[in-house]
Image 1 (tube, rainbow, N blue to C red):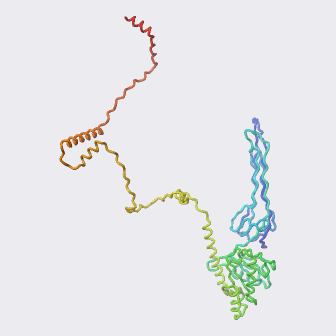
Image 2: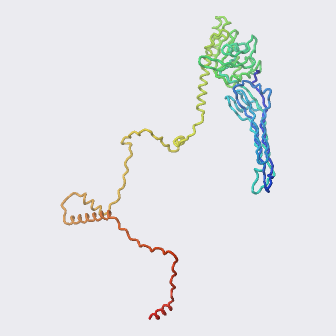
Amino acid sequence: MRFLDVAKVYAQSGAGGNGCIAFRREKFIEYGGPYGGDGGRGGDVIAEAVENLNTLIDYRFQQHVKAQSGEGGKGKVMTGANGDDAIMKVPVGTEIYEEDGDTLIVDMATPGMRYRLLKGGNGGFGNYHFKSSTNQAPEFALPGLPAEERIFILKLKLIADAGLIGMPNAGKSTFLSRVSAARPKIADYPFTTLEPQLGVVKIDETDFVLADLPGLIEGAHEGVGLGDRFLGHAERCASILHLVDGTGDAVAKTYKTIRAELEAYGHGLEDKPEIVALNKVDAIPEKDVAKKRAALEKACGHKVHVISGVSGAGINTVLRAMAHEIIQRRIRQAEERHYARPARTPRTRHERQTVNYNAPVVAKARLTEEPRRPASARPRAVKVAKPEKTVVEAVFAKAITAKPKKLGPKEGLRLAKAKAAKAKLAEEKIRPKAKTAKAKTSARPVGRAKAKPRTLSRTARRARKSGKR
């Protein structure tokens, strides 16, 4: 299958169905009224990232993606069927751009991720929707909304944990075939690798994906050779393995050339962790290995590994160094995902008040016995005001609390009167109050009420008196 990492797609969503103009015509129903239904909704254009794809070759032959339009409304207030969505399946790591190729819309970096690129048109309303008390027979309906059309540029950036870069014939494909089950093309002429190759590497307890990128030469950012567009596949890598051909004469110059191309490309590629390895040491005399290694370390400023893709010497050390960088990035990504989770919605009253710092916080219910607080922290008892005493009670209390002394005739008489008043007061409190007899009202007469006697006039009363006499 041919590898393709850039594609141009013409996409169109579905148009909405038109509303229906219909009237109810049935026997024995004189005024049926409007009966037209609404139109169906058009389909959307949705991009979906799938794991079983690693190329955009499908869109080389199918450049037009069109969703189904909605069906028009029908009589009996029947709504038209909705149109089917158009699903664009793309490899994981695909970036979708506008027609200019620079405005990023979405990065499909997660397996199973879905994104709606175009929205389908809504269906139009039928005449049944517009009926009212003032318009009981509408003779119009609305058409469906038109479809959306856009052009998208798809760019694939492979999801790899590490990338291999270097000059042509630096031994990148040989290294990939040595550490993984991938079988890239290997030959003794430059630019053997024309497209990125992927391989799964396992070292100790760590698995990661290694990408072999086509070779770079001086002026690649200007389009010399295969160009530098393949460097986009290394943007997602955690580390870069820079292989330098040890059989060359100027290893330091070769290293600086590749670094200049990375800086010219940009996109943060020059800041990624880099592991430098001097390859093909099995074809170099031992006396020249140390000299070239020292020159390369001076050019890059850090440690240089000495390996051989054919014999396998020093390969495990390089793989462990790459695995260390990959593990560190995975830890950082896990922490970012953890802290990027949305805050949990408070459900209880205590949780809601804890989130709202301005509100008073209600303490959680204690299941254990509360510890005894010191005396200084205990709440003080509140003094309750006693009811005021009467004059008699005050006099009697004063007499009781007074110190015993010889009483004179006046004091004795006063004490006797106070005791008598106290006893009378206590008796009145104990004695129940006599119930007052209420006047019993006469029962209401049952039956027909008697007529009131007629009031006689003054003359009649005088005549009656004179007659009795």
